[in-house]
Image 1 (cartoon, rainbow over the protein chains, first blue to last red):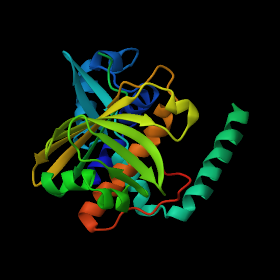
Image 2 (tube, each protein chain N blue to C red):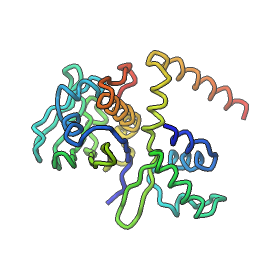
Image 3 (cartoon, each protein chain N blue to C red):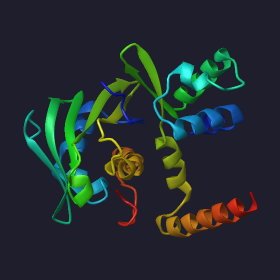
Image 4 (cartoon, helix red, strand yellow):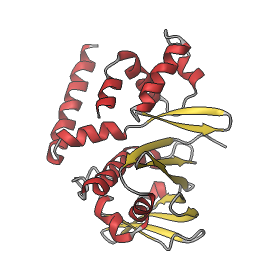
Length: 104
Length: 150
């Protein structure tokens, strides 16, 4: 679990996860596209995310595709959120999203 | 060949044999798969049914079965009229020993264009895999609310 928190404690790595969340199964080239990060830095960040099991890879022909693996994040949630709190928390997130959208 | 829609991995402190049993035993699946039980003889070409409370949720066909290494089945969600009409998707489980644990990789692919099944499955697998890991490592599945479980 330490590895997961360390991997998440970096804005660049979180933005890579965001990109995979928006579109799953991207190659290194696709992930680098439009980012202000060097290819080398992206490779390094992806290795850290993969070691923490937050990114899963899949060989597709000659390409290596990267997938967001939310299983460890789900386990963190399960550790501290009891089942009956799910509904209330979902309601709070919806409320926050709607209120913040109005301010944009 | 289109690329898979989802690839999930989890490391479970168990043996490939126990994990295979957990993925294929009717009573055991029911204990962690949020009330869903899987019934099949797990031979290639055989049907596999996923039922919850006596109701068939998914109708599957075994495409590959190589215990305790690789399992693949087609997946058709039948409890919903729209999903029922879609082409079946395909799910593959790969079990690999890894430093005293087993690395389980679940790949789900071949969804229909604009599939209604796809969004419902994307939230389901992380739940099922976390619960599977929990029951094999601690003996306890994860608690759940029926309304959120896939």
